[in-house]
Amino acid sequence: MDKVALFHYLLALVFGAGVLTWLADRMALAPAVVLLLGGSAVALIGKYPGVDMDPGLVMVAMLPPLLMSSSFYTAWKDFRRELIPIMSLALGAVAFTTAAVAVAARLASPALPWPACFALGAIVSPPDAVAAKTMLQRFLLPTRLVTVLEGESLINDASGLVLYQMAIAAAMAGQFTLGGAAVTFAGLVLLGTAVGVACGQVLVWLIRRLSNPTYSIVLTFLMAWSSYGFAEHVGGSGVLSVVMCGLVLGVSQHQAFNAQTRIKAEATWETMVFVLDALVFILIGLALHGILGRMDGTTATLRNGVMVALAATGAVILARFLWVAVAIWLPSRLASRMNPSVRPWPLGEAIVLGWAGMRGVVSLAAALALPMAFAGRDIVVFSTFILIFATLVVQGLSLPLLLRVLKLRATHGGAILSEFEARARAFRAALAELKSIRERGREWDAGIIDSLVQEYEGRVQSNENSGTKGPEYVQRRSKYLRLELDLVGRSRGELLKLHHEGRIPNKALHRLEAELDLEELRLHRLLE
Image 1 (cartoon, rainbow, N blue to C red):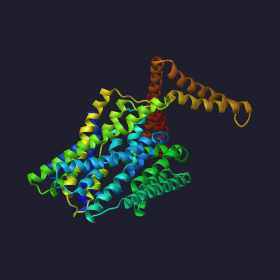
Image 2 (image 1 turned 90 degrees about the vertical axis):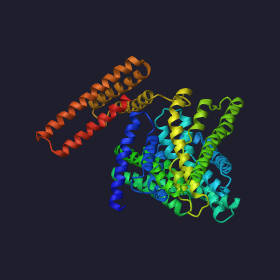
Image 3 (image 1 turned 90 degrees about the horizontal axis):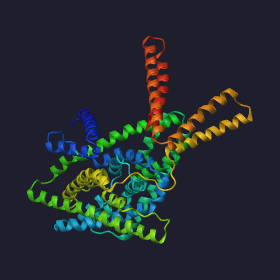
Image 4 (image 1 turned 180 degrees about the horizontal axis):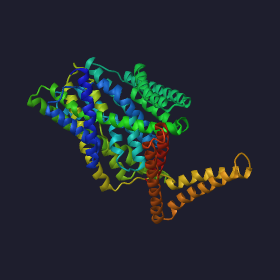
């Protein structure tokens, strides 16, 4: 396939991914599942152009922006509060799962070398950040559960990568040392963290000095790729570097970004993440074509691969449940008995935590990156694909049912204000400042101050009533906002009429329409 044909093929994939995502929304299914099934179906047909997924290109081109987006919206306070269970899963669960998968694979296929078994375990042990986000964002889950699941998937690749490198070294060189593995792990974590924090600080410094939103948004994308590449170049974890860079930017976004940059950046990143998410999961499905092509096609080989894949899938799921039960749920229950201030993990949340360990593009890219001379490579790659397919499809499709059975709802720990209360307090602070200015009796015209005081008193009262006066007032407020939306639409129609008659220039139309767009966006968000 030439480069022009490849470009057209990628455009067709994006279009097909958009259609599949639309179908997933219509059927109330996770888009990742539908995209994976669609890509696998095309791969099995066997008539599509033979494009193998380059694991290095996927890791470098697609993964950094997706990781940056996930970490950018991570709640740092919640992440820090749940650091112990996150690290327990990112370190302990990864090592335990690696060993469990290795033993299960060896029992399923005694001819498979131990290094290949451990390589398979290391490849599939860390849940994937991209898969976790795409699955979880459709559900209103308890805050702590979401924080732990997303936090674990963001930082567990460093431990999985060390075990992966140990398995390859054992297979290719015949030996490895525990001390060498510890040094490698420390280098990945420390260098990756340092590079990510430095890149994040530099990015914040630059954005604060740029007034053009376009430049700032382009810089965020460039820094996502740069932080990944530089960390990999110096021997650190590129994944961890991007995550730390995104966390630093996310913590500083409220001071570093102005309103225009924030609105434009959100729209730009949302579009880019949609395209990359769609491509990632459909490419995973398409990778089945190349994986099957590299198998020798004999019944015995396929049967052996299926046996290893099923054993590895069962081991991954069971090992995670055991680790969550023994290392997280049970200790939290015991700790709460000794200290009533400790909030234990409810059984339902622990069950979902154990079930929602989806694997994705990182695992497949790591499997495809195995050296061609690696003993048992075809079995490892095939088993990895089947395991990814099983965790995304089986666990992804069953997650909504599990949540309904367990009756989990979005909850917040501590004294959390409602949006109405928070908005009322924000407006009350502005109102207090207006009254203070009026009392000082200078700087502003009294009529202007009185007009603004009246407006802000109305905003405070509206939000306080919405939070205290029950559903009748909320419905009345909703009708009021919808009427305002209709008025915005009427204003837009008048603008278009004036432009059509040639009475306002094109530039004025766009500027005035942008103001109406912001007002429409504000009203829609209030209606949510």
